[in-house]
Amino acid sequence: MVPSKWVRQIKRFFEPKAIVLMYHRVADLPADPWQLAVQPNHFEQQLKVLHKKFKVIPVQELVTQLNSRTVQSSTVCITFDDGYSDNFVYAKPLLEKYACPATFFIASQYIDRKQLFWWDELQHILLDSPELPENIQLSIDGTTYSYHLEAETVLTKRRSMQQKAWVAPEHPPTRRCELYLHLWERLRPLPDAELQDMLAMIRTWAHYHMKPEKINWPMTRAQLQGIAKHPLFDIGLHTVTHPALSFHPEDTQSREILDNRDSLNKICHHPLNMLTYPYGDYNDATISVVKKEHLSAAFTTTEQVVTRRSDPYCLGRFQVKNWGRREFEARLSQWAKSF
Image 1 (cartoon, rainbow, N blue to C red):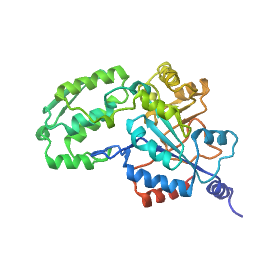
Image 2: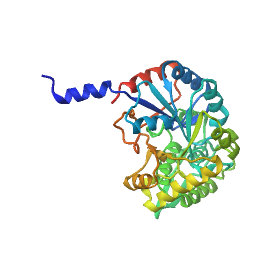
Image 3: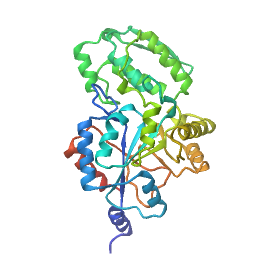
Image 4: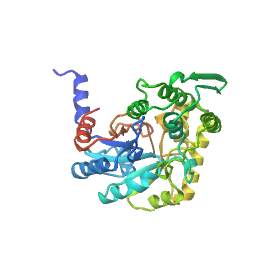
């Protein structure tokens, strides 16, 4: 007789599963430590695979299936987080070409800001500046942090190549990478006002005056409206300032989500009821806010398929990296078999 545990596992293996893909950027970047970007030519190869072998459906359709416990196999949803302008410039035309619906989850404070997201600016300051002071000392959240770059103040060609190849949070190949990782970890939990103050201090310390390319900026209001008006696309919530929610009290989390919804409603002119957690970070208080505000679904960064048994407020997604067709197909096959 087959043990009941094995029977359950066999049933779970064969039950219908949907895959939700998580993108951030469609761009060709010289350095990408968090592997957030997919080159446009690779993105097109990925869309060709999805168009040919899967049924790409809107996220809202998946949520409707989940509510009726009728999730279908071989279905895929496409999501984008943050709201980079390259989503409009490069991703949108390709999604239109292959008739693939997508949902863009937007951190509303950054819209129309002619500056980088904070993690990108920190990367440019520390990893791209030709020369930095040897010592840095900051008071972060009441604790003094200091670091010495020692002999690595000048950015040599060899160090630049090492840094461009680095994938965070793997072992940093240079002291600049190590400093970047330390500061990223310490800044991420801060309230936005404190984070921006720290970033300004780091900018001043580094004598940073570089002007990034516009393609690396967040979307403009006009770009966001262009996406929101398109029948293939939906807009979702991603908080106002992109905080790590679990580090903040429930009332702060509530303001981040509700103000985000209000701001995006004014731009997009239609109700928004789905959320992705910044950094995939949330806690019980976050879930309480999401339920209280009657959002229909919320997505994490946990890599797991969606089945009829999935919790609508902890839905998994798979981060898509800069893969060509064969690697992407292999990953999809692997994800489709997971449970």
